[in-house]
Length: 286
Image (tube, rainbow, N blue to C red; front, side, top):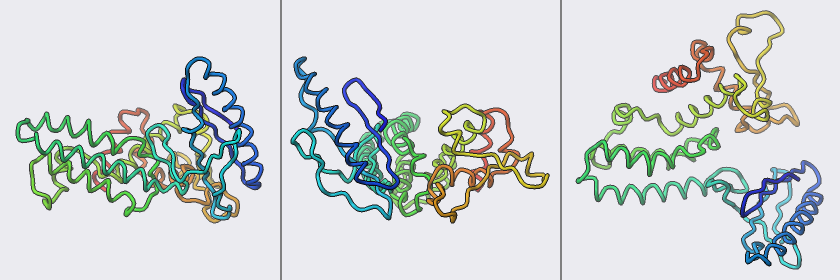
C-alpha cells in the first residue's frame, strides 16, 4: 500500500495480482487508520471526511467484480464505478468514457457561450478564448487516452472541429481540414501521439522520473545492424503469457511502436525544441 499526502486529502494505492481478499483486507486496515486521523482532526473544526471518500477498483478480466461495501469503522464504503484524480475521471475499465463525455459537454457549453459574443470580437481574441476554454481542456492529460480506438475519441475531435469553425465563423458542415492546417492544430489523435512521443523522448534522454524510464528499453539486436545507431526501442511481445505488455495500451507497449515508426532524422535529434518541431511537422504530413 502506497499513499500520497495532500493538505486536505489522502490518496492510497494498492496492487494485488492474485489474492483479491488480501487487497480488500489491506484497504480496510488502511482506511481505518485514515478515519482515526480524521476523527483526531475534528477537534480542530474539520468535518468527518469518510462520506467524501471514493473507493475504486481496477479489476483484470479474470478478477471477480467487487460490489459489496467495505466496512470501515461501522460505515460501508461501496466501490464506485469512477473517481476523479487531478481533474481526470478514472473509470474501473480505464476506457475514459465518462471523462470524454464530461470534457465534451463542458467544451460544447463553452463554445455555445462564445458563439454569442464572437461577432463582437476580433479573430485573435476569439482564438485566445478558444485555446483557453476549449483546446486546453482537450489537451489536458490526454496522453492517458493513448491507444484508445478512434470511435472513443471521436467526440473530442468533433469538439475541435466545432472550435475551428467558430474561429472562422463558418457553418456547421464546413470542411475543417484546411482550417486546422491554417491555425496549426493537430488532430486530437495526432496531438495525443505528439505528447506521448515527447514524453518518450524525454525518457530516452533521462529527463523523466525513473519509473517512466524503466518502462522503455533501447533495442539491442543480436547482430550488429544499422538499427543499433538509429535509437530504436525494444517492442515487448504482446502475446507472451504474463507479459506486462499483454495490453496494447500500456505505455511500455505503445510507445516503442510509435517511436520506431518515426523517421531516424526525428528520433536522433539532440534538442527537445527541435524534436518537438520536427515531430509536429511529421505528424502534420502523415
